[in-house]
Image (cartoon, rainbow, N blue to C red):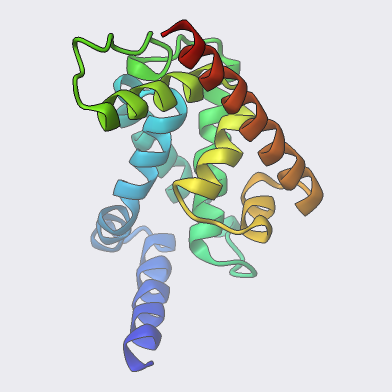
Length: 182
């Protein structure tokens, strides 16, 4: 219990320093959260664009940190900034990068069945509309509950649940199509 409290206090100190423009605090904040933010960005926009987009996300975080009121967890606010930046990226009509929209590798190129399934899932995820992909990844990759997802996306819980159901149905349809063509 003490460790959890000290982690929260540590984060509060890092956030306070970051708000004040303390470069060391900003670096600590970046180090603490850049991996999950990069991972989310990579799954939403592709690996080729994720590094640059992660930098843009953290620039937006540092410039907008004064708007973080602390009524929600910092990570919820951070994911909301990250998802919004990724969706903004998609609206700018930039091409989706890397393996997200490429065809899955042939069975001969990937003899391991698990790798094949992972590639098929990545391909299908790349075919989803960005808002559906975002809700699916927040639920299944980031393991957020509906309340957290609704806070990150700024939508009612029912909308988050509906989008997740649509994402799952669309993924099933796409994956079934891959299985039938194999």
